[in-house]
Length: 260
Ligand SMILES: Nc1ncnc2c1ncn2[C@@H]1O[C@H](COP(=O)(O)OP(=O)(O)O)[C@@H](O)[C@H]1O
Ligand SMILES: [Mg+2]
Image (cartoon, rainbow, N blue to C red; front, side, top):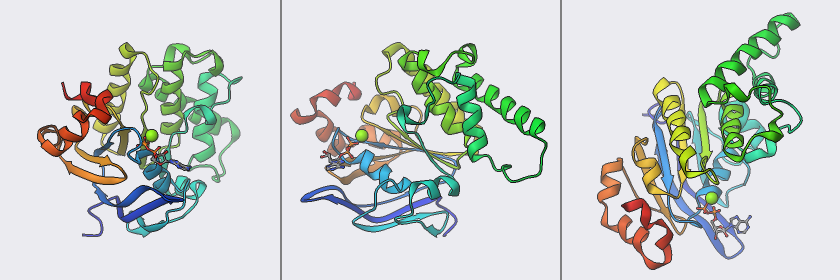
């Protein structure tokens, strides 16, 4: 039983003054699945991720990762335990090339850091890993470009590459396609799907557009006003009338395109 979920939350709560952003959320994530968390803007999705990664301390409740209680453990430690969270462009060194950024990320959290390898072996190992990753995320052609010169969509791919470089067991992706040109989105979703299909990672994907996650998710949790409104396989969620009402409600009209 305790090994059947990689991540569990129990009544996880975060209040900001009088506002309850995450209201007693309990969910369980199966290993090597893609588990999406969807919901309108303001539903508490990003705050929930911040509680998992240790960027925020919960008001109450617990986070269990691989059977270990990690509640309130700071982000640098959850990263070393195998929880990877992308942070938009804050981890990117703008003057280094795209490839150097990915290589450094591989080195900084690489498991071989303390082994007595020669410098050269170290370097070529991580260099090769960086090239594989750039291939995977579709940035191989931009490898030598300074990161600052990437277009917005390229920067989002680089974030994903930097995250992959650290080889986390659990990847937390918060709206990875945000701000991307519409025609670039399917390619990035394909990359995420490929990572899922490789089968060695668990991916949690936060997204407010329901249509983006329907085809790639094994399981979907719907959040609404800090709470879990529904959860299930994509087809169940698509057919769920309570979810439809929340998404089609006037307040959330911007999301109704996702139901088409
Ligand atoms: N640091 C913060 N201080 C105060 N309120 C916050 C903070 N972060 C988020 N909130 C509020 O918590 C609610 C949930 O926000 P968020 O988790 O960003 O939602 P989502 O990612 O689903 O759009 C919103 O009402 C937001 O304004
Ligand atoms: Mg958010």
